[in-house]
Image (tube, rainbow, N blue to C red):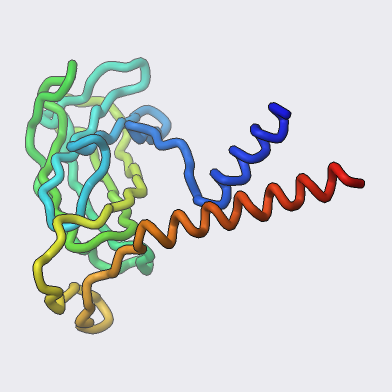
Length: 196
């Protein structure tokens, strides 16, 4: 019976799209790595300021402070075309977070919920020794504070100006109904298999 419960759990997770989340996103190149952390709780929300910082290190773990890196942060809405200008270019400043001192950080306000790409580009300043790098991070932004009255929003688009209505959230009852339906189908299949 425990095998059936395990299969049921896997099936429900697949059905609902539940995947384990990682708190920090790590990217590396040949001799530079960076861990992205976003506050609060690595869950940025549309229309709300998000503090993002990069624990930038050389191969071997030595921290690269922003003073030693000519760094730039570019934010693109996904999907985006190659050569398209970034949606946002937040300025990086020196921040201290957790055990890191003087690392690159920025305040980002994502305009709407959805998928974004953060591109951290850097090259060494005079006296620093590491290869120029580009690190890409995919970030999913959740729905932010609910507006009292939906307002059309002007969203920057390279190809044209688009007026969009805010996205509607899926009601919780619809998600629950889908879950119960999936469990029912699964149990029906298990019952049919056991009869044979």
